[in-house]
Image (cartoon, rainbow, N blue to C red; front, side, top):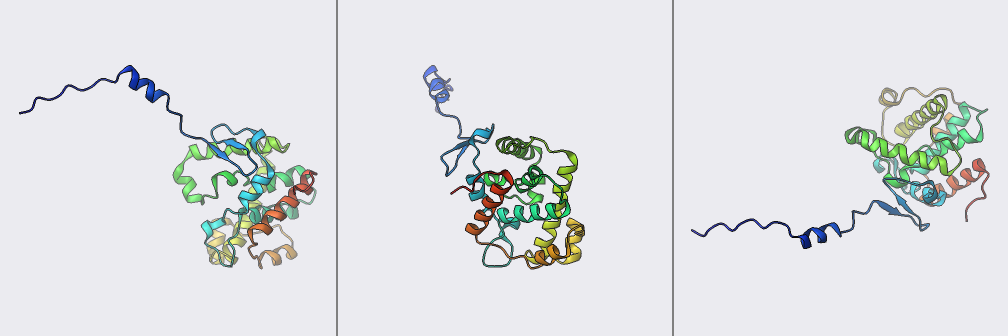
Length: 223
């Protein structure tokens, strides 16, 4: 029988070699050239052009919608902002801008469907909150919105989800009501437009998002 060889203990050279390895990359390079630290996002590394480009190419409903184009998050937030403005005509531009940016963090993390977010748990939510706060600071909004504003944005989001679900994602009306509630508080004209919802091409959604941002933030439209 071959005698067992004694286990080798790590040498100082091995320990140094391991410690000198670079840590795993935790930043995302954007098309603007910015490098966004995903663990500690800085407002200085956030650009609206990157947000618009990303959101216009992230699909709602995991892409499971009818039409030649996916319904993008960029178009979704435009819809939500229109609904919120329709329900709150006296809102300031700041609250409208906050609504437009309510899903802005998805330009980095994508649009995970709600069941998957629940499965991931609180760590994912904490990351979303940190990134959202950095985005707010970048564009002159308070890190945390007043409760009544946040609640109203959520209501507008659910109304948008109802129409997206029934018009594009194959939901029956009673099924959509069960998940998102019955839409209320919007004008008849807006309801008619939402009932004819059609996804935009990515480039169009990106352009419309940037134009709306420029109007609400009083910034010139990026070229």
